[in-house]
Structures are given as structure tokens and as C-alpha cells.
Length: 428
Image 1 (cartoon, rainbow, N blue to C red):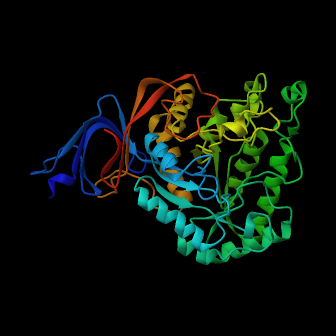
Image 2 (cartoon, helix red, strand yellow):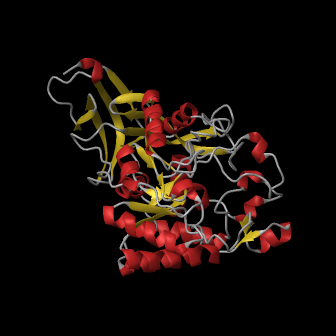
Image 3 (tube, helix red, strand yellow):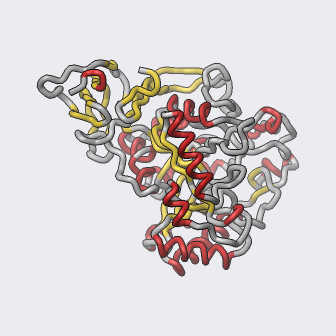
């Protein structure tokens, strides 16, 4: 045993949804693996000890949607800034959508991104490859080569492509090789040019609306294509009550689907736009209160599998515009766990169930072994203090972008430490 690679996290509330563990215990790490939970093995001598009294000790978070802005949009954010923000949010693995510049439609681009992430040596990066060349064409990408380069799925990042026949062929091809297709359920025509939920608030403010049928029409299309191809599909960012109901029915039917929701959609609705607050300009838009409540219920009953950050850094110039012209997107990596914990506290969700939505369920989507913290498991850990208050300010957020509806507000709960592969990569 090399003492320099040993770590003990003591007196924390250990939460492991894979093994069903929820108890106060010590946790001991040797190298990149967890050695034991409870008493330290004979002869174990930790080089470093973290006192986790009052904290949750849980698997590191797996975020299914975070734009890291490289390559092509480094003026909005860089890998260094955003992977640092991910570590500050307790995130050990992050999936990035393919809408970079150029899009992730060639193996070389994916390999370059993975190489850059390894050089930074922080949060692990799992790219989602482009489903079609350029993200706007009809030519299917070389999925096998992209998968070899490191892609864990293939998607469009934006609304469905207008050419449904090409989408059918792409899903058929993906199914042949066992790949998962990631689709955001929004019809490319309905609500085109919309910037807010089509309802009373958008009408009063004179904003172009995106109706909820833009989501339901897309979902019905996707489900029919799944029935025709057998393709496994992950639905990205549900936003409406009708959409949640359709997904619930599709799961009862046994369709091979999973879905996620952005954490800010658990708390905010179209009313929060207020007087054209561009920090609430997101895509899909915040919908009505009944939609928000249906999303929360869908998480509680298992219809929705995963909570993600939908982290999308936006520069000041793109946000400080009239609402209809502002670029959609909010920062979310460091707010994912505090906001998810806030929802769980408000709705009476047990911490173990919450942790599953942020870790094991997300790992299953990318077809990795469910994240757990039993003896022998990888030492990818998050130590979270659910009771410490902190104020969201530019000086307290590590992301290069700090455009969030929570700017200036106080949240409860903050990550104390993040351990990646046995190394304390943040805090401690």
C-alpha cells in the first residue's frame, strides 16, 4: 500500500443507490479504488483525511448535458473553465452535445476533444457525436468510427431534422450497431422562431411562442420511429406536462427510451421571465406552472430518469440584448446539485432517490456500469454539505459564464470536495 495514494472520508452520510446504502460511516480509498466502507482494514494508514460530518458522501455526479464550448466557441467558455466548474459542482463525468464549431461529426474532432480533456486531468468528458454530417444535412455520420473515437451516443443537439426519412434511416443504422440516439423532442416547424412558452405570459409580453405541441408532435414521431426501428432513444430535456404523460405511456408500452430534464425546469416557469429577464431565456423555454409541477411529479414516479444541468455558457454580448434576440442558455454545472437538492427537500424525496437521478441512472443512459461506491468501485466521489448557504455571484462561480436566473440569490447546499480516480480534484 502506497500511503501517498490513500484517503479516508470520515463521519459522512454515505449514500449509494446501487447498493442501497444510506448510513453514517467512514470510507477508505487506496489508489483509484474504494477499499472499504466502515472500519479501516488492518494496517491502513490514510495520507489524507476529510472530515465529512454533516455531509453526504455520494458517487460523483454524471451530467448528461453540458456544453463545454470547445471547439469553436472559446470566447464563451473554455474546457479549463468549464471542467473546473464541473469539479466544483461534484461532477466527475460530463456528456457534451455535438453542436460545437465545427460539429462533432468527424473522429479527429472527437479525439482532439478527448485529448484536451485528458490534458486538463479533471472531470471526464464523454462526447455525443453528430447523428448527421453538419447537424443540418441528411448524410449519416460514420457512427462506428465516432464511437471508436469516444462518442457514447449520437444526436442532433437541436430540434428534430425536417427530413423524417433521413431520421428513420439514421435510427435504423444506429440500432444495427446498438448505439443510442439522443433527441430533443421539438418539431422543427412548430414554434419556429419562438422564444417563450406559448401562453398568457408570452402574449402579454409580445414574445413569439413555442407551443407545447411542438414537443408532443415530436415525441409521437420519435415513438413511431422507435417502433419501426427498435432503436434505443434518449429524450433530452422534457419540458411539458403533455410530454411527460406521453413518455409515461411509452414506457408502459415497453419502448426502449429514457429521458432527462434540466434542473432549472424543476423550479422556474414562464412567469419568471418577469420584465424580459434574458437570464430566463432558455431552450426549451420555461413553460407554465402546471408543466413544472408535472415534471416534478414525473421525476418522483420514475417517468423521468435523470436530472441534468443543461449547462450552456453564454457571453455577455449575447445575453445583454432584447429578450427575443438574446441567446438561450444558462450556467448550471455548479448549481445542479444544490437545485436538485432543493427540489428533493420541497417534494419529500429521499436523498438516496435523488442521488440515483444524478448518478446511477445517468450512467445507465451512457451504458456504463451504474455508479456506486462499494468496496472495489472506482473512487469517484462527491462530498456535499446540504445545509451550508452560499450566494450565487460572479466571484463564487467558476464557470466563465455566470448568466443564471439565480444570480444574486442564496442557495442551500454546496460541494465540499470532489474525488476523481482517488485524487482530490476539488476542495477537501
